[in-house]
Length: 184
Image 1: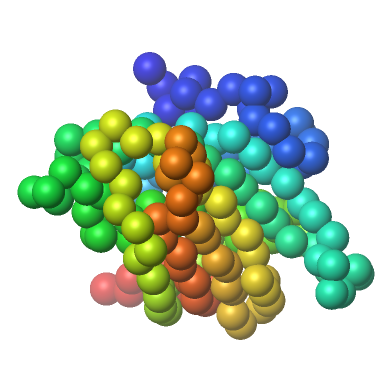
Image 2: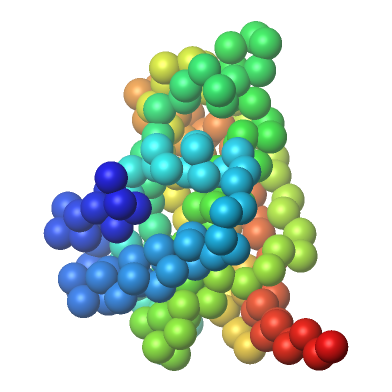
């Protein structure tokens, strides 16, 4: 199945328009396509994430600003756990890294016409409680700031059935630099 066929934007909740969601995924899948032939563990786990919401919300403290918000769900599977059967901290970091980037890209696309995925500067995570094999997770990401020099977001992983916070993260990114031509 082609990557684009995995997400039906009409099934994703939130107040982002269908056109914005379609534009986002056109750019998102273009990002996934490069570099050609690159493989890694992220794509296997990230491919199982189910998109639940894409929203643009007024910031209560600054009504003239918008906040990007994305919500995802995933079930903890065998390749995501440590020897005790709990969600591995490294996998939590992967989920937070990926899911905290999406509200930044959504908000930047909505406000500038360009989805900024950025490059990570720091990722700070606090672990609150374990999530076990088979648990359903709800991952909520929201922007803190999206500027020309710094991008930041927060992310929470919740155990959906037990209504417990599993981990929280703050992700600081910078806009990606443009590749320079390779002169020979």
